[in-house]
Length: 226
Ligand code: HEM
Image (cartoon, rainbow, N blue to C red; front, side):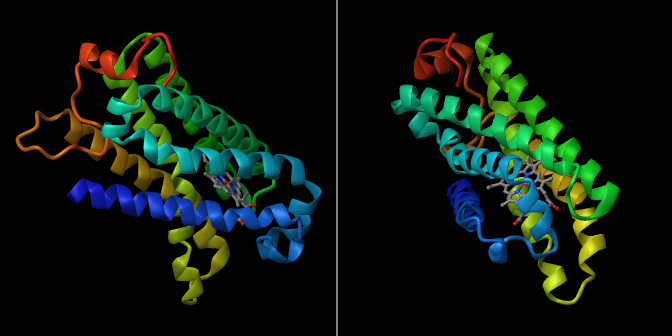
């Protein structure tokens, strides 16, 4: 039950962030991030590539962690996985392109670029793992990949103090690093918990310690990317 609540909270926050990001498709600078209006208007293509990929990865990711869905609909899991991979690639490449013009100076810019590279690397390792039939490693790297995509949510939550009077620029720059560190730590906790043998019927968010043969039964063809 505990994990179901965690999954639901994560999914609702992800969908809310994706919905809020959709305002950029209006191409109306009035709804853009105030400090970056002119910059974004001059860099619409990488920005929209980033937002589109980010929206796809953010909204498909949660469903990949549902053990029931993986078991009952392995083909859907594989297709959603391919869509997630494309979304993550576009979000990461677009993120790298706009990191150099981000608000918050070099601290924020380097922080965003590091985040984009980490997310692309984690996603690539997750893909490599499933191609080599390493199911537990695939699941763990997808957890890290999604934790990094989910920085889009944590980053915005950590900006809340600026609405209560905290200075925007330093909080924004620190947030580019802090939200990544916090999400990676949470991912490691979930991964380590999932490695422990289960003592009850509760199913961990990351899917539990499935064995490779059992997982192969649920994932179908082992050569397919998840
Ligand atoms: C690896 C993950 C991500 C990286 C590295 C990243 C990087 C960036 C960077 C560098 C910017 C420019 C910020 C600035 O101008 O100061 C940005 C803006 C933006 N990103 Fe991402 N991002 C990531 C994930 C996502 C996701 C998953 C979404 C979901 C839709 C998203 C939506 C946006 C939006 C809407 C903006 C425009 C600024 C705003 O209105 O908040 N990003 N991102």
